[in-house]
Length: 201
Image (cartoon, rainbow, N blue to C red):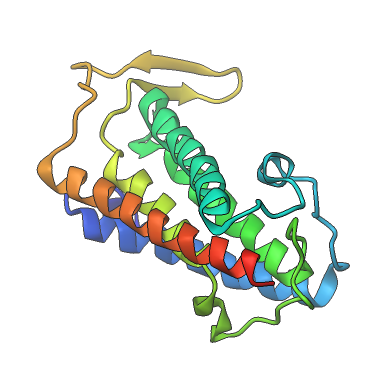
């Protein structure tokens, strides 16, 4: 699996990381739907606090608000990748996996800031929502910027690290730029869909 996650081809890295995320997603969605109370996470995540519990006054305003939050979130992935890696694995790889898990719990417990009419049982209906596409975009950001790490973690307790030599430049290959651009395009479309769904609730 390590060879796939740090494979030279971007699509291989994406499929490997998103595949792991999909397994976690389905597992946590199922467990949370059957075993956790409804609304258990509502208003308790950073994104929920920033987004608030009311829609904006128009579709454009809602879309721009969601997009701004997601672009800030994506920048955290790039920053994490830039700062550390461990045994070749960029720190930013952890972020979309955590967010996929949290999204699964929100789906299973209907913990969205603006809740659905009822909690969503595990089904293919999730492809009609925007969240999974946003998570795919974040995963693509992670694998597109996997090679920019400045430091290698050598030990977690106590934490120690050493600089990566030669020092990587903050630059991407053409393939990585294409992946990064595609991630932004997916975010734009997914956020527009999410804004539309919120405004028509």
